[in-house]
Image (cartoon, rainbow, N blue to C red; front, side, top):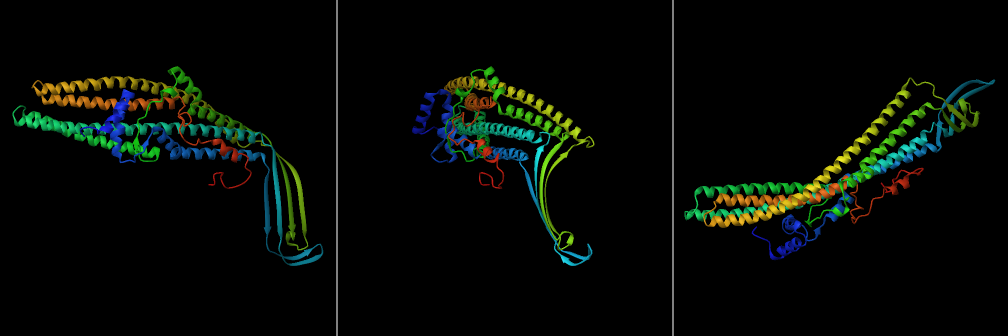
Length: 475
């Protein structure tokens, strides 16, 4: 490709004038992504992340897991409610004998029906601690959803920028092939008139073959990036617009970023809620050593009792039941000790999570600062390589440079441009990585045009639900 049409070149120039750091990305938009044969309407990084927020299967399955955790509270709360059961029996009986001086003989059909109502009065606070544990599980699941949302948005931003980068690199390699083809033609013409040797022609042919190989490699990389984009975003990439870093949403300094991450990162919050879950489990297991008090009401109606046709009675009772555990072979004590060790493990895991988040913040912050510096260096390298290539070409025309010198200069310029495109991609991706590392990467903070998922809606719908098989969303 020898150059852009006038309209495309004008668009590149306008973007480059507004922000020189995005000149290479401008090339991606107006040239490379057009090769995807996409609709005319452009896709922004915000619209792509909005798609991922609503349709990404990993995020949606985690939301479903959160709704399942809500039902755990409903199950725990049921321990406060009475338990009602009914029994009934009907059968055939043949009797032949003497009962109270009277002969009883013949078939009978004994029937029994009854209901039992059981209300727990005291169970060592198992129900209370079970409810607290279930609520901690719900809070943990919400933080896991928030962490999955962060990962999905970060992966979506990375996939978006990878498509932009790989499209630009493919376009640069395509342009390089065009330049080297012209270089080979000129070298062959000069060989015919004796200005260069066969070695110069071979060097030009080798460079062209290498450029074509690099083009196919870049094409493969782009196809892989498109596949990952489709997996995360849910649709094929269309004409992708340039994306800018989200520096305005980031903390001003690294210490502030670390402090924010340690207090708000969802992975740390989920680990702390897991500590609460483990602590509640210790109390639940200890409650098995306490006595249990139940209030039991029973009503039973019997017809033809014991096979005697004239026997009929009903019975109703209300009883208080006390059950005191004395010794269970040591199993309960072992269970309590085990749950205490699991609590210690959960506390250590929370400490590990804090250290992991801190390291992630420092690492991503360093990558962001590095990407900023690399962009400045790459811009200078591209400018210098362009000047050097022009000079080498002029010197080669008057015999002061060889064909190999021109080819090396051309390859140096290509590498500098590829490095600039990669650095601009890294700059945007690193800004999203920092925001995720501090626990603030969310659809709300990015102001995405989506309907926010609210886990409280389902929780309030099912927490005090007494009966019903259908879930609130109809499934």
